[in-house]
Amino acid sequence: MKDLSDKNNVTKISVSKIRWAIKKLPIHSLKYDDDFLEKVNSRTFTDEDIYKRLINYRVIRGFKGCDPQIDYRYLTDYLYKEAYYITNNEDALRTVNKLILLMIEKYRFAGISAATKLLWPFAPNLITIYDQLALAKLKGLGGIGLNNNYEFYNLFWNQQFKIHQTEIKKELSRVNKKVNLVDQRKIFDLYLWKK
Image: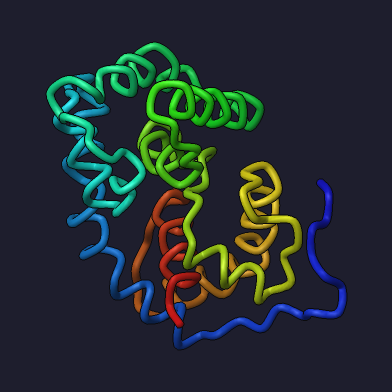
């Protein structure tokens, strides 16, 4: 795996921020993910659900003037046709990039963040959410070449997750909490958002 870090910047892990992220996990999941995940798993999501997800994740602003009953059908159709078939990292990268191209074509919006936030529920172990708060923190951890580049962002995010994962597991054990890999990744995301 390519190392995308600045060698002069050593990663410092903040245990207090990890503890904060562990406490926030149930609230965050309920607010942002649980309803849509249920619909993805039952294959019942609609254009309206896509619209709500874009609002919840605050990426709707790139879709100026879109009618939720009409204009999101391209996204919904794409997700039904492509997103359920993500099985490895190459599929994930290809699917994110194709969705970004679709958004440019149909909405004139190159929304890396929106694409990853829509695709994440379909493959949460393979899709890394591209987020401006996380991006800023990753840059602070020495990440280079991450702006508007999902492939580099994803690689560096996963490198940092592996570095932090031991401390995350240690803190989960300390509070006697067992979570799966998806929730460990969410905890790391929340950790990156904390200033």
